[in-house]
Length: 557
Image (tube, rainbow, N blue to C red; front, side, top):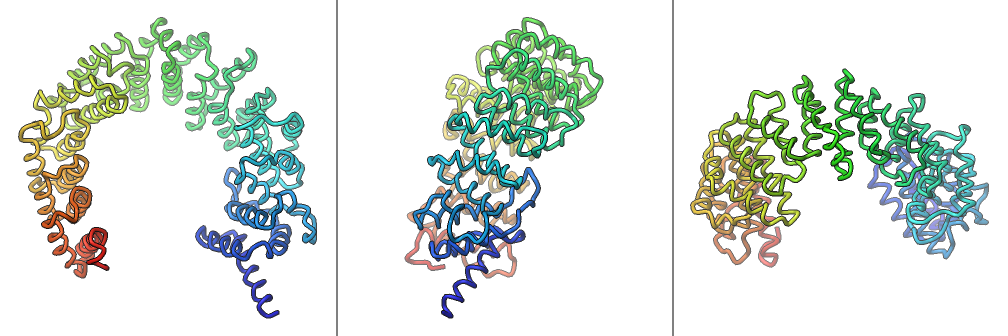
């Protein structure tokens, strides 16, 4: 009897930790595991504890109480051990009172852990519960199910009854989301009404996010027009996050007739409004039909004045919008700006070349490469770094898309012109580091470039900037450069411990226990793990840990 009482007390203590609002995540996990180990015998205690616990309303929406992640897993495990369905828990004979909000919400949450089971009827019952958190959990679970299968007609009708103004905003929003996923017009109608300014800002943002990601392709004409009008209005909303989301969403409802209307909005004097209209054009230009139409209507010429805007945000966005439009006219404009260092959008134009439509195709890539090489040789430091970043992005794109010819041409443009060697000797540490970072992106192996391996080793050992030396050690690791092992061993003695640590990480990847010289160096390095200087001692500990992994029989740490 004493043992049984002690066990009950342990269960109650674990439940207190599980349900407590301030319990840390790790403690909740441990409490859940402990309760699961007790088995289904504790199910009556757990059910009554959950059903008597008051509704958990913190944190407020859009956040969700962290307790339910663990209470749901506990109930699922115990029900499975007891061979009971989740519905059976609500009608269990061990309950001393009707199911409460925590029990309801936990069971609804538990249904998400068994996605192949059909609990649609149970979730509809949850929508009738008197507690908002339970109704919201049920609506969200139905929306999740709707992303996989269409709901039954009765379920759709139940969702519609919770779209009225008597219901709370989160529940109305989530029910409308579920209906939208089922291609129900009523879902779209309510979500559109949530875009008005009188609605709480979090609800507006959530509704707009849903519309920008889940909007059905097929919209009736009046709904398309209503959505378009609302989104155009939101481009000028004081909340920049809301305005930006509206700009992203416009392309989902756009028709060709939208382009002149959108162009007319460019006359706004508000800088944020200008930027958002330009964002909307950029998103539209990513679709081939609209991109061709934008060029046909000569709309890129309407974007040119914004290249000289006072706001750098507007200038950058104008460049990105032009880049998305692409075409010979845009290429000529951006090329002119790139070679005109006094232009206000000079840096922004260099940056946006990496996103210029069709930039990897000839002959455009040859022109862009020529502009960037010229900038690297002649511009000030910031312009050169921006040009290098753009070139690195183009190399990465060509490699990722497996456009071999473009990758090869861009790489040759750097190596044959001597730019790589020139920049590795540059006075700017920023420039030297950037060109080092670009080496793994080149089409040609470093070994095919005479003198480059020796130059990298020299930088690793003797560069005046510790950041550049650390970068060289990291690049040796990226290049799988076993030829750099001697230099990396010497770098373990670098006065900057960040350089030494980076060299140690490179050695871990490049060397092996068969490299006796490396092992001997690590043994010497491990002796400093008791040094009074913590940074020095940490390096010794890492060396010892590496030896433990390499030679587990000889080193126990």
